Image (tube, helix red, strand yellow):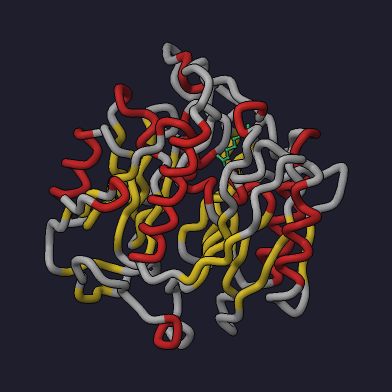
Length: 313
Ligand code: CIR
């Protein structure tokens, strides 16, 4: 247990793998890669954009019915999240809180950064969020990303894409078709990915995948139910476990009582998971993953999870 910032580091094995399945030595409490080293390494995350919740965070969209989030606690949880990303070796680009958009701390939905499979160059894509109240979020993201990348691709209306619906699995991307991401947007994104030597497939999360399971229809985003852990392995909620698209992958099943835990993120050999999901944490440990557990209660109240709080590359 690390007492600082509510982070729990659980080291299970002395090795781990990066996003492309390269085995490497795990480290316990220091950054896995320095920014300089990682700039020359493929498939390694070096940077992330984050934005803290704004004072009016509670005015954002939610279906969770878990109560009103506590702003101070949300700030503390966000700070712990940022510290965990730094612990994993990422340099953070910290945007200012933006009260115009109460959901804007969920930066993942407004952009993604992909790696060209042939040149390994990083390439930024501006999305077009499916919720009208979030559309304006892309303008500050555009400003930020255009200063960092030579050119931006973008999803254009009538297409809509939320970053939460895009699950990168190496050079393949699963694109969720949801209440937020429509077919037009998914097709546009698939074309952009093809131009960068990546493949993609669509996963329709609007349809019920388990006849008796009402939860199957309640995923906000694809990544509310699935996460890529490297080496052709996915953490997957019951609602998505039987989906065709995941058949050729090794699946780490998330117990239905811990559904929220499916939204975890692998960062340079560590997996950030939501705290208080002991079954999932134990399963990952048994499989040899090093995990960092983070309190996420205030973001969960607003339908947000670990992936949503950063754009990582
Ligand atoms: C929304 O409904 O848009 C926000 N309250 C939550 C967004 C969560 N984002 C994500 O899963 N990528």
